Image 1 (cartoon, rainbow, N blue to C red):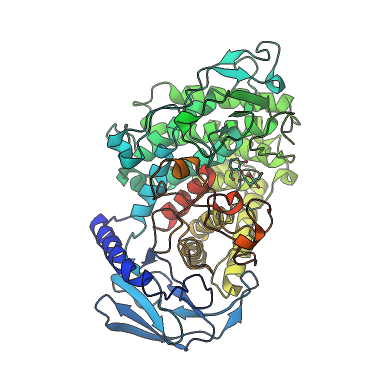
Image 2 (cartoon, rainbow, N blue to C red):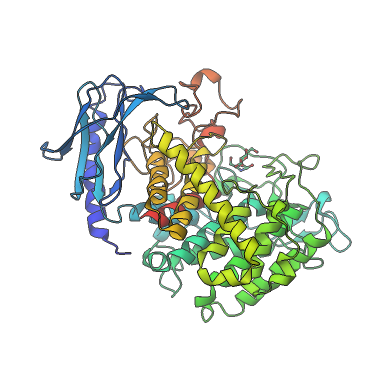
Length: 577
Ligand code: 9MR
């Protein structure tokens, strides 16, 4: 993969210059879904399929215009069709055969011109850097320095060296109220708590990106305290959380606490102003298996850094094995709801067979010992669904398919079953993409729908690697285009990126720091068709599934940030850059 940072930067600078012109050009109607042409506000890889979405009612003739206002390309839109998810009728402007690097807008009589976008190579590199750097800003227990955090510098908070064992977590050795130390790790989201289940998918997705794209990983300089230490910055960053995660295992029995949190959510205050008492809360089968899977993956992916990280991989393997054993003995310790008096995020999951399949695959690949782990797994344990904190099988499947040599570790029938399941899932997304008037595979809008788009893209990219079918890659890119502005609200859903960018995210730091711009590089949750009750219904200007979103910090159902959502964005950007 070639990197052209200079080209990327100049395109970004040009887009910023054009942005001013664009916002004054909207005539106050930029929120009206039927008027603006929607394009990816970062842009398109030169050789990729390039589509913009034109409102129905506008002319069938569209033009690509450069920054000197020269028309460089003319084309005709498709026929109009209505997208069920937005309730709007749109046409597609396909300019795939235009591949001249530069910065452009799309015009069409009867519609507002698109926000500017770039065409070029590796145009998402700056996004990859910011999305990964966002984890540094979320570190708990350490100061965010001026040198590394700039205007987002803040003092250390939440040392977590004196954490209480909650009643629900008490055992024969560690009693209720005992004090343990569990420092480090990232804040989960807009809140300051730390959750094993969500940390696991997050760290796994970052490890997976490093595994698949090691050279790109090495090329990213995040300007974090560890930069320059012979380990890629993204690996240093994920280690900050992984090291915390292993402190969540009870050394006495190998069980893993579900989370380390206060008893309830606090107000929109800075980390250093939060002094609520924190607890480790209830061990769970899901937490044990998720930790096992993540440590086993890390054991493999961190191999090149053995000299820099002496002993770490051995420790990770021991943690993984102990957690696996605990889960074998405790297969149904479900975190179905918070214990009484605990009101922080639940990450409740009553189906954990998919976690068993994930952990078994990762442990098999890490140890080469299929007998010990896979014999415990049946086809019924798999859930072929978009990867999520509560749906984890496909992560294992992707690990198994990452390298052809892993094939021999699995029973032939099981291997074909896994491969077939992944391709079938990707085919479903591809079919949704090809039928979507909005040219997006996204067909569901739950809490964190933007991360569903990103995770679909990761699965599609895996299908592309396995089959070589470029249609899968095209659909994966479409998922990213959706996130970056080719959506019915024409928001670029990543803080600090795009012209119409999200500004008022549900993030305690971004709200309380007195700085207007939110901490950059965060993917917000996005439209949420199901959850209710955060802000007055009337504040949601639109009610269709793909448009029930509000850029207000109190809209925690649509505008929160979260580490798992960002990790999915990283995975997708690494795959398609
Ligand atoms: O991402 C989680 C989403 O899938 C759930 O539907 C939602 C409600 O339980 O919770 C989300 O996770 C939140 C967590 O519980 C607490 N930290 C903020 C997370 C993002 O909103």
